[in-house]
Image (cartoon, rainbow, N blue to C red; front, side, top):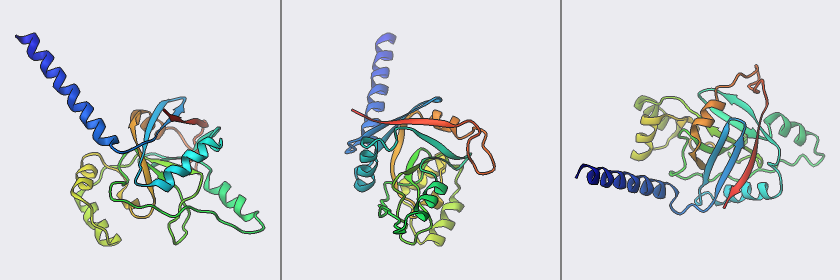
Amino acid sequence: MMLTFFNFRRAVLLLLFFLFYQALSFGQTNRLLFKTSFGDVKVVLYDFTPNHRELILTAIKDGTYASSFFNRIISGFLVQGGEHDIDIEKRESADPLQSKPRLAPEFDQRAFHKVGALGAGRDDNPDKASFLNQLYFVVGKPVSAVDLDSLEVKKGIKYTASQRAHYLKSGGQPRLDGDYTVFGEVYEGLDVLLKISKVKTDSLDYPIVPIQFTLTVLE
């Protein structure tokens, strides 16, 4: 009888985990693998931010991320990779046409800056448009109800009950919401990402020991 009950309970727990994962990835088509010396990080891309999803999928196919690095790391804030702000500025300054290609933002209440969120970096352009080849992960910090109340007033936004619950339980970077596009999230390997976020860096937030990653699409 005890063995039967144990098996039943185990089956229920497995079913709940499966349903939770299905709910997380429902309707989401594409997944990515970030392979690092610290371990693997797996990400699901949001179908409701289609332009950013297609941008990174095309970049991977074209080899843009064939040899990339996490080149800006701030503990409690983010882990950023791809093309660095400084390199983008140098490249664009040297362009005789002075072109600054950007991707228009895609804001959606389902996509917010919780811990493990995957976002697109940008400069201070007024359109809040994203760089084409820069990404970041949120590692975040604790968030209080007072923080969220203050941000709602300051930014003129309203957090949903689900967003509030997530921020209050797990933290994040809600001050970035509505300013930077989030287009995916980590579903496996968050511990790897948090380890990376704690490496030693120099005064410009570059990691002392370079951290390379390879980025591929999971079938």
